[in-house]
Image (cartoon, one colour):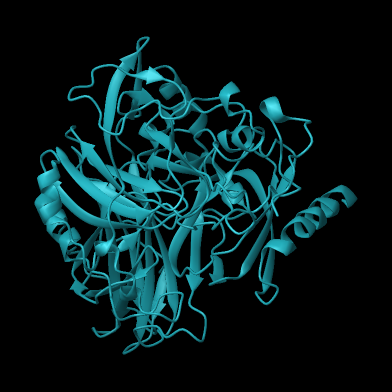
Length: 549
């Protein structure tokens, strides 16, 4: 126990100097274990955090210091990432293989991060192996500070709704399938907060509402490959926030939530006092899968109607819904100034990068990648190799070109790292030549999703960009045989992951890292490596480099 306490104290000593002393600290201890649950009615081994599946909701406020001591009681290494948290100047806390050595079995590590100048709905999950397929995920909400106005009245209560597809096969067996070159196939079902409901069954309510009151539901797709359409019987949803941005408040009967995305909606209990079904069903798969969960009006003993609202058909509907999302230019997010005071559409693009997702067989096994390169994680995390000035021993920069070949038929398996100049304004085009749906995420940043269109991107496509009120977010979908474009300033120094949110594709190489280095080597731009950082690979046992000042 003394050793564990020392670990926490060392972490705190190493990080207090890098944060505003006026921002409060919140401490958590998480025990990660295996357990047994039956999400789809079949007992299976799952990953629990503090004996919970899904894990505990993490409730924070802008600029809070979040300190989480994670004890890995599994039989293999483990890491957690905080999807959508930008970790300003602090990629050390990002919890992916390119930045961090995993927590060894039987040991602990203390994460310390700040949702600096952020608000919104997010989630956390494991990035090691296929642990995400066993659980270990949970909701993460960042509330606005009291001094910052929110563009809607305070709700009666807030609920986290974690949606996701699910496999009844254990994560180890699924990993063995992928390692052998095979695919996972279709999932077995859909969960809402780790449970699967049955229409007309004896379902305990997941949430309760008082008649006449308005509630905030934070929806996140924490699944593996399926876009999910979410709807509530007889109730409209007013969309108010998306991945950290306030949006224009439109009402929707249903919402397509793509993998890795989070929405916040307001729902008013303005119907007859009874039970109502929430419905989540897959989109764009050969076979539709779905589930229900019950919302109960307080005092009700009337069961929900068995007639469910239907899901939309086709992806044109989904594309049009994406086009209806608009940034709320007059609302303040985490800072006092309005969101629209940042005029991204007037900044000159200094670099354009096209990323084409690629699928091919390598040595008889299925692999995925970008621009002909299938990423493979290294024993020494990329960030550590770079920080210790040993990058050339671990990886090469810029093994892909900004403009890929017109036709890519083969894949090279190697670390995929792009070097992007600090504080440059960059355009990234995700181009999908396949018939399947794609969803992509960028760690460390939010970006402006300015367009999504069918066909192939050309420079003429820029005429259709939304350069006024595209939503600032961290995940963007790409429809079959289509492209999506994002714009952002790479002003957050560190090593940051761009990845497919389809976890099968990500595990088999459809990801890369962006190295953003400040030429100043200064604390103004990036924090020093925390003293409690695990060292592994070729940097294990080495003294830490000279600290930034």
